[in-house]
Length: 476
Image (cartoon, rainbow, N blue to C red; front, side, top):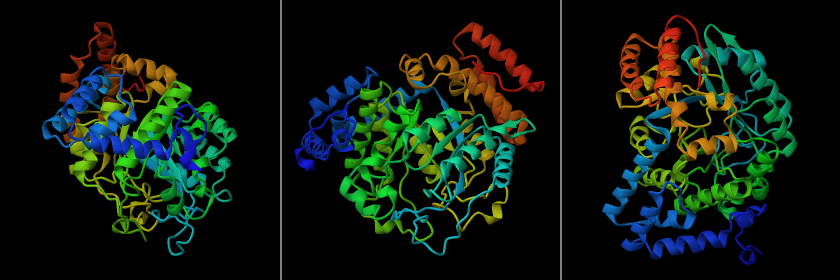
């Protein structure tokens, strides 16, 4: 029985490294100490050492009811984000290949019982058209998405699609990193994805509460909680260095999900020496036949921001992602508290980039931020951030423990800052509107002086000039 299992961060069993009783004990401890100023101050001081916090300490911060200490956490999260990632925001877009799915997930319109949603699966030629449209927007990094269907969406289809995407060179466009968000699979299939050159393997847990998980996934292979939760272990065993975690906030209580998410990160760090490359923060949203009000655990924007700030404080090294599920106003707020990657100009339908008018009926969820990529890029610059299209670490072999070594020592800024400026320059030259280009050129002039190494700054300045003259794809 679950109650008799012992929490073991290094265990290979889901119900031991995400032990239900440990989470309940953690939440009880956090609730008991939510006004313990002395303890909370001590946790904040520990967080300032930039070595992270464990799930129990983190849960106390999340529960904290002392306003001035909460403000200190928000300020610390913003400072840690700057210390590790500077003022860069990496941009990407999702690409939905197929919405065929055999699962019965009660929160997703792709569920098998939905008979009126049009089922679509792109051919390689259709994928090619979509990728060219994304390249023409300026994207360099994609996250491919598709439902779980062993007949319609076998691993061979995924691998062929990845090859198609990487092979497309159109004008000055190229997709340089393909991240993959597909259902939990075997070590052998993860090995095939690794050999295909994927970037990050992403899989959202949806909920760490096993009872809720099984209720929310009543049918299909995804019903198997342990197989799904242990997927990241198999991915790393298959050679994938970088994995991305996430829960769908709103399915269970946010306190439970937060503790489970951090326990999962601790497990990967303890077992493989490498924590999650990214953590995503989706909230349940309206979709075809899905009413988010039917779920009892929705969270306010204020709680959402606090979750993000506490995550940044507790896992300082990880990339943190927010999508166009969220509004411009929400995204602008939480970017300051730790977000380092956002999507832009996104479509959540199968197709929709090449033929935008046909993108509504197959959406996985409603998009709240409907701005174009150009508008998102300009907005980021106007609020003080460098939009980055960089994929250098992945292509230079700085992945897994090698990336973490650079990140945790904060040496990564020596690469990231100039790489962000050079990839932004490419965007300005090839895709930006005149207004965005003007704002961007002024930003680059300001930011180039902040590159700390004189040698790197000199090379970066030379490369920026070469980009203006027509050369592309420089990186440190």
